[in-house]
Image 1 (cartoon, rainbow, N blue to C red):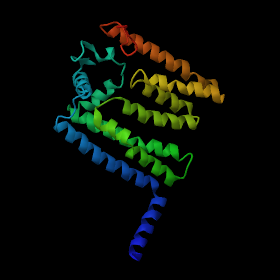
Image 2 (cartoon, rainbow, N blue to C red; image 1 turned 120 degrees about the vertical axis):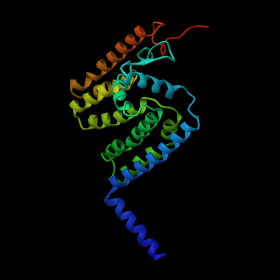
Image 3 (cartoon, one colour; image 1 turned 180 degrees about the vertical axis):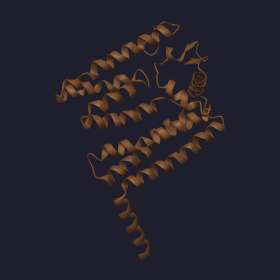
Length: 245
């Protein structure tokens, strides 16, 4: 028992000295577990919600120069969502043109999100508690379900949004606007979340440069949905369109 108590004290002391290292350890374990689960599900034909198939086809065609083309809907993928991030992602995808690449990519992004969450939490609590908060992200069943359900683009938006919040708190407008642009490129509706920083800036009476994200974000959303409507055979943004009966 004394030996066990000594080991426990050493572990606690190491955790207090190197909380970031422990967080990285948690992220690495998360990657191992959920890459394994995702690939197991894939090879057992568990992905039947179409999204993985859609993104794989779009990226496969894009990586061969036929940007955003897919056959599941009779149109460019930009007629569904204004996802500009798929173009640069297709370059990375070209290194390994397989659905497994997307599952691994998604797991890496979701696991890595614990790092900006840790940095964000450190602004308010001790590094040790911030590490525990990072772990709560990795242990969150909602995050894990997102990881193994299908492939989507929005995990990347979550990762970028965490960094966006850090730059907001640090009052660094340059990196903030750079990350804001990358965030809205993930999908058109992400702009609705990003623009709320402008409303917060008005409430906090920040400088006008921070207010601009409100009209810019809303303008991006309107322009993106208009372009989607033009590229959609039905001539409208289907996620806002409703019919009676």
